[in-house]
Figure 1 (cartoon, rainbow, N blue to C red):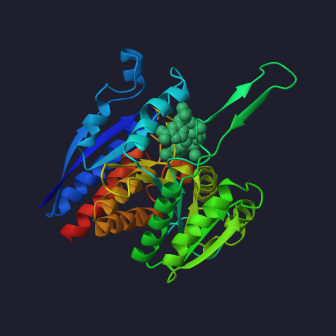
Figure 2: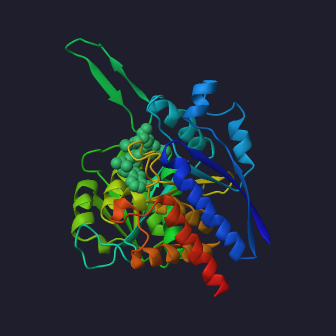
Length: 357
Ligand code: NAD
Ligand code: MN
């Protein structure tokens, strides 16, 4: 039996509510499959912790997390703490120190759901977003405050290593999942230094992987194609900013934030990767017990796939699709009246009966 050490950071708002259900599903997996078990440790490093200690995590927080096989993260954000504090003192240090260069976001219309596009074709692709550099840099500055000539400069940082890593990951993912095409999002017609370099390095990797088709589109046109013909995409490769925007657009065409999972992946596996729903702490519905836990349960499934158990990922996804098709136990965001807990119970229940027959 293989035991995986999982660090769980439930976070704020609906984070703990949906994470509880994801852990319930992991326990159901453990109970139904003798080949796997989880050694779960929960860390309450959230806004409450910040208000008490003046920091988001202890000084040796990263050292503590480093010893785990993987991290399951809820969501963070609380009106009593500025958002840049929760983001830059907890999420960013984990992503950057653990070299989680790949932000992995599946865009898949699950069985039982209707796309707002009224599209009759299946939608099933992934966005692989560069997660460590690009447009989201802190290089630059401001000058001449308050004067007529006041200005701000923000630099984009593209490195050969950063681009190569995400592009190679995209081709490896395509090959492992039977995908035949990689689509790169660019804007090299206007952002002539950074995006031309992006194209050059991506195309070098594409040439070494000529068995998989390569295409590129300007980001503005690609955004329109996501709406007009989403069925044409398989693996979309994008820089940090472009991938961020495209993935919110992507989640909107397949049912919304309650259904959007993600993984922050360290491709070298030198450090733990971190899995989290795309959504935030949703203060408007926190405490009401009505958050949709599917995004977080699916994120836990992606974690199992990353740990080498794609079979278990597929099992969880089928259980999710079954409850979506039955339509008896759905949260309000997708037209039902069920609680977060009932949805978690239903998915865990499917996994248990599957095995016991
Ligand atoms: P949000 O994702 O929390 O909420 C946006 C809207 O979607 C809200 O109406 C919310 O009720 C709804 N929603 C989100 N998840 C849902 C779910 N599982 N089920 C049903 N409805 C759901 O985004 P926001 O309102 O912009 O941000 C709220 C807080 O979350 C802020 O403090 C922000 O900084 C933080 N945030 C954190 C993360 C993260 O932890 N990675 C990501 C995004 C936002
Ligand atoms: Mn975003």
